[in-house]
Length: 139
Image 1: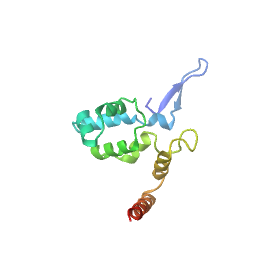
Image 2 (image 1 turned 90 degrees about the vertical axis):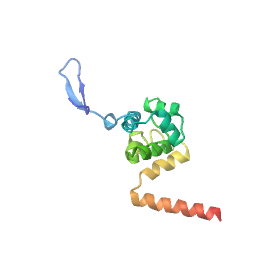
Image 3 (image 1 turned 60 degrees about the horizontal axis):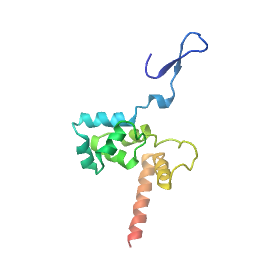
Image 4 (image 1 turned 30 degrees about the vertical axis):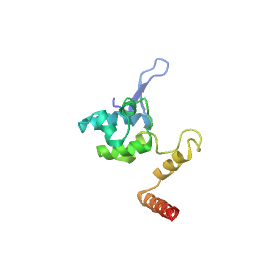
């Protein structure tokens, strides 16, 4: 039986494989990041130095203490390790419907979630608009 199935039994009856939920198939993002770091032969301190984060914080991510790392940190690590950011964001729980209330989290978190729901063309349009607003603000 693979990772995607669980065995269930009802009142002593024969065990029956049950399909696991989608979340069961998602690897912990910390484990993926640790393996990527090791693959690149980097120590936590070196990674911390390169992205400007403490090695203690990175260790907490890798050990699953922090299960949903800041998306900016995920982006920095994805770039450093040459990993797909969108996949990491999904595994960390940043994509899809927010848990609980639709207004869960602060406005930056909500904005980030909404941008991740867009396709590449839409994200490029949003980025262009943000750059326009920033240019106007400077003048």
